[in-house]
Structure formats: structure tokens, C-alpha cells
Image (cartoon, rainbow, N blue to C red):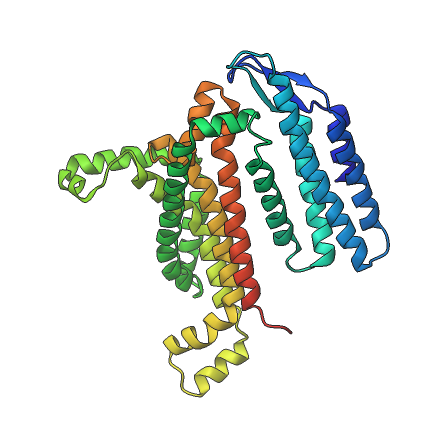
Length: 368
């Protein structure tokens, strides 16, 4: 990670300067802040490579955080310097070297944090990096970066898109759970029903997303033409309905597989003992299978939750709104900053969902 950060800062452009938001920028090399950040990254890696002592991990984490903060502040300061004397439409954006260096430093901070906190190091590093970034942004050091300029122009739209995106992802996950629970129970039984469930949920995965969403739009259009009264219930061929149905369909495979594996995790002897003491099948499910399979069950929901956040982006193709609308609008305009304005929150939401459910799964695990 340290080598990647140093190489990115020395061999790739630090920033780019463009006359407006639509034209590719001219690359600009690194400055003093980048050189110091690279040196700190190498120092952090050297500390991690040494003997396993607590102070080394803390020192490596501190060096990585200082490098991150220095680089981020240097990017903002460099952007302000590039824009001095330029026309108002000019934009200074992060170059490939800046992006790669920030990513490498984040990974290095995560490794250093895991050396100090093996179970929660990744989450701790993410919170520290986020807090440091908020402090730097709050100090006004990032205002000249093109991404910050784009955000100021669309702050209200971004906030609304995040709320819509969370609604799409949550509704899709809820519907998929409702459908997947009975399918997982069927899959526990060997026979034609289990094979039918496997074929159904696996077959959906091979259908391209664009084709599935287009088929849903066409199918809903035909259904509404046959039964116009459905429109009074809020159903429409364009909007959240096809997006939620399509996303939920893709979530069924990880949910059905994970739920079935979790319900089957109980030892056969334990199940036999439960039946021997007179527990009904329902009681065996609720009092034996679910508690013993909870970590696996939560793990499958974790995978599906992250997947739902990502797939909800495709809702922008069918007029469902959300962050996908910003992404596809940016693609139509060839506006990189607008694409990032939609994509970066998706990544953040997915990481939050993953970390939250990982914590929940960890609390459900029992020590051996």
C-alpha cells in the first residue's frame, strides 16, 4: 500500500485542470504535501513490518492518518492555486495519482488499525478517516476541488437522492426477505420443490440487469393496460415499482442460499434431541434452528443488503430516482464530477450497511 501511494504520487498526476466541467483536464504533478505524504506512508509500512508491538501499530496508524490528512489538505490547496487567475468555469479535479494515493493510504490505515484492534480495526480506521476528512472539509480546505463545487450546486438534489436510494434499497431487501423465507424452507427438503427453487433463483442471476428491467417495464405496461384500476394503487410501469421488483429478484439467490444454510446449521443430534423432548416443528424452527444459525442468517442478509444498495443504482434507468439518476445524468453529460457525486454515496452506504451488519453478526457469534 505504501509503495502504491508513493508511486501514485510520483508517477501519476496529482490534480487536473480543465476549462470547464465537461472537458478533460490537463494533468498536474505532485507538490510538497504529496512528497511528505508518500514518505509518511512508507514510514507507516516500515513500522507495520517490524516486530508485533502495540506501539508500532499505533505509530503506523498515526503516520497513515497524518499522511491522509496532509495529502487531502494538499489536494485542496493545490486546487485553489491552480484556479487562481482562471475563468469562473474552470475546474480543478483529483488526478489518478491523487485518487490512488488516497485509496492506498486508506488501506494502509486499515491495516495499521487492525494491528491494534484485530476485530474492529477496519471500522475504527474508517471512522477516523471520515472524521479527519470532515474536519478538513469543515475548515474550507476542499472548497476549490471540482467535486466540492459540483456538490454545492446540487446539495439539495444529492440529499433527496440519498433518501430515495435508501427507500429503494430497503423496500427491495424487505420484499426479497418476505419471498426468500418460504423458499428457503422449501429448499431444506430434498425433492422437486428444492430443485425448482434452486433453478428459479439461480436462473434470475443470468438475466442481464438491463434486460430484466426492460422486461418488467413492458410487463407492467401490459398489466396496467389490462387492469387500469391498478393505477389508483400507485402502480406504474416507470418509477420505483420495476426498480424494486427487479432489485428484489436479484437478492433472492444470496438470501435463499444463506437462509437455507443457516437453518441447516443445527447438528442433527441437537434436532433429534429437540424432537425427543416434544418440541413441535415450529418450536424446533424458532427455538433451535434460528438461534444456532443466526450468524449465517445475518451474514446472508449482510450480503443482500450491500447488493441491494448497489443494484438500486439501476433504478435510475427506469425513472425511480435515487443516486442512480445522478450517475446516469452525469454519464449523459460526460460530467465526471456528477457521476462521482452519485457513485461515492452509493459506496459509502454500502460500506455502512456492511459494517453495521458485520457488527450484528459478530455479537451473534458465540465463543467456541
